[in-house]
Length: 52
Image (cartoon, rainbow, N blue to C red):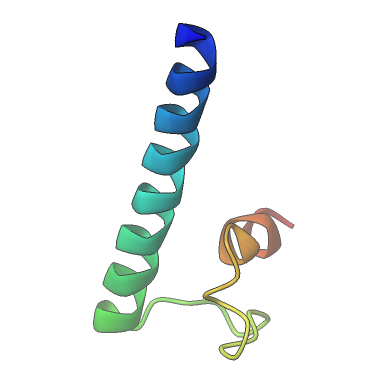
């Protein structure tokens, strides 16, 4: 049971880190041109598109 809670905490932490980086990128305006601004709040979209 404790491993399920650990998994939930890790996923929650990654989602929180993603949204912090999205907000920082919006604030500083450093998104690439190929990232669709309408989709950036889909979890991990900008990270996946940014790696390609």
